Image (tube, rainbow, N blue to C red; front, side, top):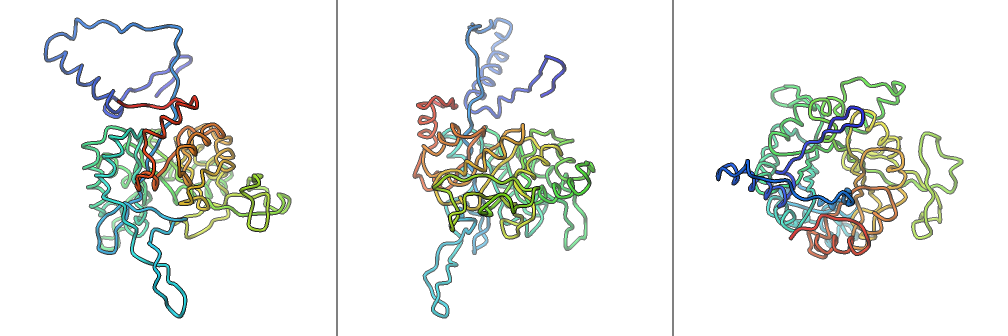
Length: 382
């Protein structure tokens, strides 16, 4: 959208507005074909009624290759996507079975679109080990999904500059993102590279270089196309006094206290799929990402991932209160109530779930019905 003074112009994308948008396009095309377009009349409006933005329900599909080399949708337990293995080595269980397989990416995504998902996110969770340009299976998933899904598609994983190990050709983050956009993505999600960009931003005294992945992609495709995925974990502390002032410390509710009764924590960002911790907190990264040109934050929490105990409200409030761009709550959803709780108790604009939908424990329609029952507006289909 663009704005000048009190005038704001916004694009309407019927092809990404679900059934309503498709019916809009159908009506327009039929009117053109029948020669009745000039006979249309404005719809009646009630000046006393005001529209409002609905809260969005987003479905995430973690996509990776299984041990046989097939792309599957999986789901982690605190980012571990392998089944528990009861076999023993030296008297101890290995805990490393096969990759958890919850279905095929395109078929699952199409089901979620039909059931009313407002957005769908494909997260390529092994792409940090290879480049996107040669990752044809994932690109084909996007191409096929975009043929039958008419809500926004986000794709994440490996959005960074890299050098092809064989040809030695250097691909920029913008070139990688462009390949995803051409395959059908509406938004790209940047993870590890955003943390690195944030560290550089503060190292330079909060100055932009114009060369980070966030800046280059948003300058070409717009801020609405750039989502920052933050993967923090809790660092429990008994008091805020001993914590570096650059970190935002939050107070925890009784049921959320640390293993030794710690009442406070700060959220340490991780990279490389949660395998490497950085000395920077989630709030700091979010603020830098907004300054560099991101349009949305996908806020995960490693501690809550796969636990089905609800979203981390302390984290969601800390980040949503520090930025002006939308925040998507992620990690921890296990039932309809968790969506109502996070929308009522925090400032997020959307909430994301994966496992509970994949396993058919909860339906998207029942989540939205529950939201409406508690006065939270949702987009209801049918």
